[in-house]
Image (cartoon, rainbow, N blue to C red; front, side):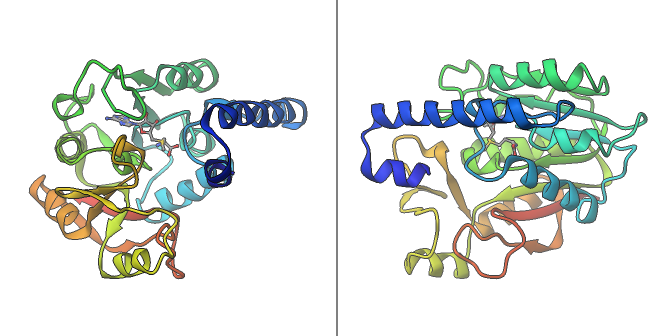
Length: 277
Ligand SMILES: C[S@@+](CC[C@H](N)C(=O)[O-])C[C@H]1O[C@@H](n2cnc3c(N)ncnc32)[C@H](O)[C@@H]1O
């Protein structure tokens, strides 16, 4: 819907159409969803057009199968948004397990606290007022100096889904060092990216990609030169070097995504599993 709207309709009208569209969807969710089901209002979800529930359920499977997640693990969700991954985790983690999530958008963290933590007290959410030109343009803290508010080696599983795809190189570098600090030895992390390699470059060049990364800024590319954080891609070799530099090891294979028009894929974004030895 977003792409169609962008092509043909001016921004103020687009905004009104989007509001009406989400109002209809939210009303329908309110009327027809099972009453015990956790569904955030769609007008508040900043996670793209995909199926919110199905994507969360798919990722829970990747966490278990690729990330070796166990029901009694202590889990960290960096850039947790409005709980797309936390919601399916509420059905998987047991009383011994726990979940920590932080994000930079107050509305999303408030919704998670009010709707998830009240029902699942081992799920905790925190706000970090970090600057991101797309998500929190008035943020007071810099991502590249932010210390995650958790103890060293205190998590069994850490993940970032669709977060490094909105962060600049210095910030990604610093977050990888924080991930390496808070993850326990031999435990896994799941990270998603838009990785530029021979195959994705080729598909972008022949216009198969859903994202046109045509603006280059040093070691990253974006689809929007004014607000680069809308979508950021990195050379695969640059990310591999950053991961190694921060004391993490890639557990192969890399699970490439469909974002660039690839026909053989696991998810939309590229998934890298890392661990600390
Ligand atoms: C596309 S959303 C994905 C949200 C969530 N991870 C999911 O998969 O549903 C990107 C998220 O990254 C968050 N974000 C951006 N920069 C961040 C930062 N420096 N630290 C933590 N979260 C950040 C945004 O606020 C937003 O919630």
